[in-house]
Every structure is written in C-alpha cells, then in structure tokens.
Length: 165
Length: 252
Image (cartoon, rainbow over all chains, first blue to last red; front, side):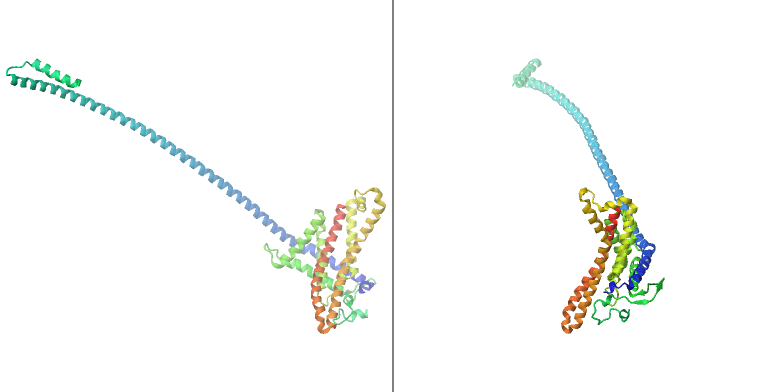
C-alpha cells in the first residue's frame, strides 16, 4: 500500500503544514471577516427592522387608544347635551302649559261670570215682561185695572213653582 | 519511484491501489529532506484554493439579500459556527477559524478526490495522522493551560468510587491516547476503502464487457454514496475535534 511507504511522509507533512497554514491565514484575514460582516449586517438589519416595527406598532396602539378616548368623550358629551336639551325643553313646555292653562282658566271664569250676569239680566227682564204681560192680560180679561203688585206676586208664585219643580 | 512515475491512476490499470501512489511533480530538497511538490501537494493546494474562493468569492460584497454562492458560503460558515457553539460553547469562539479551516480543507480534500484521475490526499494516513496528532497535542496543551494539573481529573470520572481508580484511570488514559489514532484512521480508511471499491467496480465494468452494465449500475450508486461519505467524514472529523476541545475546556 502506497500509504505505508515512508518515502513521501515528510513531503506530505511539509506541504500539509504549508498549505493548511496558508489557508488558515487567508481564512482568518480575508474570507471569514467578510462572511461574519455580511451575517452581522443582516442580523443587525433584521433586528433593527423588528425594533422599528415594534415601535410603530406601539405608536399605532397609542393612536388607537387616543382615538377611542376622544370618541368616548365626544359620545358622553353628546349624550349630556341631548339630556340637557330634553330637560330644558320639558321645563319650557311645562311653564308655557301652566301659563296657557291659567290664561284659559281666567278666560273661562270671566266668560262664566258674563254668562251668569247675562242670564240674571235675562231672568229679570223675563219677570218684568211677564208681570207687565200678566197685568195687561188680566186687565183685558176682567176689564179694569189690575194692581201691579198683585200681578207681580202671581208671576212670582208661578216662577217659584217652576223653579221648585 | 519508477512505478509511481509511469502514470498515476492509469485508466486501464487493474491495481486498485495504484490511485494512491504519490509521485513528484517538482523535486525539492531542503536540508537533506525530500519535500518535493507531489500530486498530493498539488491537490492540497487546489483544495485550499477552492475552499478559499468558495468562501471569499462566494460572499463577494456581502450583500443583504444573498446571491446563490453567498448562500453556500454563509451556510458553510453557520454550520461550523453552530457546531462549535453547540459542542464547545462560547469558550470555543476563538477556535472557530481553526475548526472552520479544518472542515473546509478536509471537505474539499474529500470531495475533489471524487474527480476521476485526481488525488485524495485525505486517503493517506500520514496526512490524516499529522492533522489528528496536531489537534490532539494542541487540545491537550489548551486543557493543561486552562486547568493546570486539574486537567488530569479528565482521567477519573467525578463521582466514581475511589476503589475503581486502578482500573478506570488506565482505561481513560488509553481511551484518551487513542483519540488521534481513531480520528486519523477513520478518515483515512473511509476515503481509501471508498476509492478502492470504486476502482475495483470500475475495473469489473470494463472487464465484463456487455455484462459490465451490472457493476456499472452499482458503481453509480456507490459513487453517490461516496459523495455522502466525503461530506460526512469531513463533518465527523470536525465534530470530533469540537468534542475533544469541549472536554479540554470543560473537563466533561
């Protein structure tokens, strides 16, 4: 087996040391820094992007919270305004209704008073006419002068009877 | 070296071990030692260049959205980085460049060996043992530097009854000392056996003529398997290095 021929042992080891040493030096000085730089740059970029994304998300959340708060506040204010408006309207309505009903009541009572006055006047006129008519009719019937007082008492008697019935 | 010089991995050659022959390309002699640039050295250089280019060219400018080759480079990088982090912990970070270079060197040594007429330098015990022994010695020195004499508690599991020490300590020492052997032999044997098998089946396919379709079909399957083995053995070699490093740093 050529593997156990010592002729080339020294040459093999000599070139192994030389070539491996050169490769090691090239890797350390040239190749590996390039790879690690590329990998680090990418890892850094990804990390940076992730951090930025997290920050943006936080910002968005804060904005959303602010928005929600503003909306809730506006809603509360609107509800309050509606309630106040309703209360004011109801109060106004009540007040006006009071005024109106008082006015109406006053007008109604005045009208009632006028009606009562008118009916009293009318009744008085009816009695006078009835007395006159009765006096005149009785004068014609019996021929002679009928005492006004007698006619009045007769009319009153009939009127009283009618009112008691 | 006449046998080696007359052609390497020769197409029709029936000797399945012929592909492991080393032959010099450029004779070099330093201080009486023959350190010729051989086919093995050539493929070491090619593996190193390919490994370096895949990472360096692959990453390119290091754009944010990776190109295809950048994904390859970054995946290799993160695979080994995760392996070191999971097996050694944060203390292993400074050994990452070494572990990564080791992984790339062995991986491309194995994979490029799959090219016909190429040479698999990881199929030579001299190379794998030199790597394993260096790793073993370095890791032992790291352990002793970190823990001083306490490092030797590695040879006696905590909590074991004291009476078992005469048996346990020799066993643990033998097991520790056999690490570089198992590490190097595993890689060397896997690569050698795989390539030998491919060569034997290939020779059958040629010899059997029309019936050679059978070994040829088998050859296709085994080739796919060998690609898996090439990657897997590089991974195993690296992950065992990480585990040994973990032992030296954390003492179990």
